[in-house]
Length: 225
Image 1 (cartoon, helix red, strand yellow):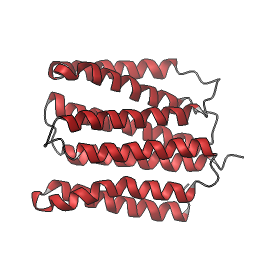
Image 2 (tube, one colour):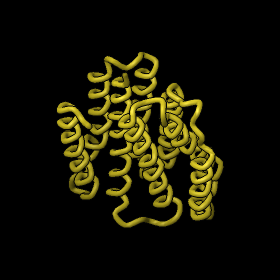
Image 3 (spheres, helix red, strand yellow):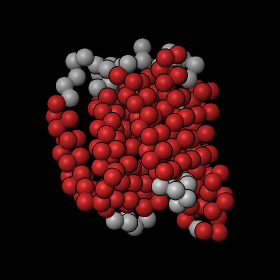
Image 4 (cartoon, helix red, strand yellow):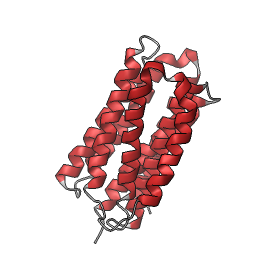
């Protein structure tokens, strides 16, 4: 399913992820963490730029913008302990990244796809999540609702690629969208509901693989005959 180049990069990416998780887990390695976390998205951006020659320019530009705003969000969220404004700024950066991903995915929408059942499942998931989050949201109520709406739209847009791209591309991008939704849910629960055990591991693992799967899936789309 993956080319040799993609497999090599995936190995490097996983090693960077392990390095990021280790540096975020020990206070003595805090300085290294400021390099390790951005390295994930920087490596992904470089890899995508090198491997995306066959992808049409609008999709390539939008994907790069989604990755760049994700990188910005990563950097901003590293400084939330300094000021709560960094959390809101990071939230906005990721919201913009999701919007760009929506634009990417909808460019390959299958008009025949029937998303009603999937959308209903997403709404049920969102309602259950919101039930746990609402008591702790406070002034963040409206921003979180908006963010949830955008990420649900991103997952729906990924689903709507079904039948318009090759199976490998659809599966990877759709898996990435779901992992992104799970990662953001874990982050929200950890911040607004209660601290989760090993939250740094679960959040970064799902987030990193979400981005990796989306990028690999978008690269596969150019191989449709």
